[in-house]
Length: 371
Image 1 (cartoon, one colour):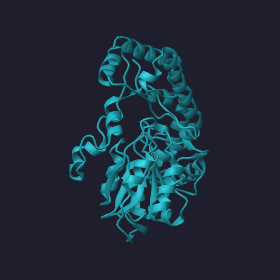
Image 2 (image 1 turned 90 degrees about the horizontal axis):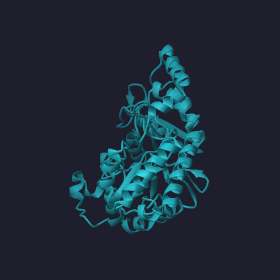
Image 3 (image 1 turned 45 degrees about the vertical axis):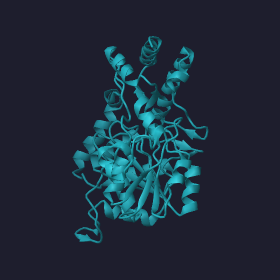
Image 4 (image 1 turned 180 degrees about the vertical axis):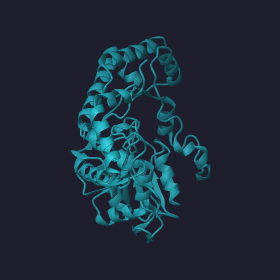
């Protein structure tokens, strides 16, 4: 079987380092906000080229705490993409704000800056661009919109650690950048985890207070916070993995190019809508996503050959039942709706072999030739 991801292979390749890091934490007896969290924060900040990083319990929490740190709440509007995981809009709703969805660019699946500009109102306080699948958004255009309307930017980089736009790492452009360490991510923990990054000292200080129940010092609460701490075990694991991230991202890029070349040689690259990349960006291929009308049939065909594809994401956020009160209807955001009906993620991870990629590509070709 060819799975969409095999984390066991990654673990086996660095087993000694991971096991040693875990054992040192157990031997230390320090499990919450200790030396590993502090050092991981420093190392992540250095890797991304930002001043401050604050470890939290998940990528979702990173988004919510960033919104709170920027004082976004009741009666505020936040523009974001409808084509992403629910956590993005969930965080907006968690602080009492209203998500406003702007359609995507079908070449990149990222939010379309011109659609963002159209959605700005007097209530808009922030934009949350999502660097989907590992592809950077067009940050220059989004930053200009933010400056023109005095808006804040919170980058959702959950799928894109190491991705770059014009030579800068994503997460370094906005007021805050938010990352997930969910196990399947390019830099994944062995459980939940996340980090929020910023160049602003005041924002970093607020994030640190918010993650520990709103306390500046223990038992003395100054604001409404929550329990959202990245634990030492996960930080120790992530510190090992961070050393390999550039290598793993390069392998993802190389494997994605193998797919591209195979599909181009087969004459199917246009029919399948293989991933587009922007000239100014470095796509780190958290997922390798193609698009075709017979997506569901292809999924079944691949499964019959022991190849497991996936769909990210089958229903855009504006059509989710939980957002009925926002009064969106089918047809309002056509690009996101079309993508949701047609995208399929093919197996891709650093350890996948060229032979496995070839087998997947041949199966896709066989399916398309039967249409």
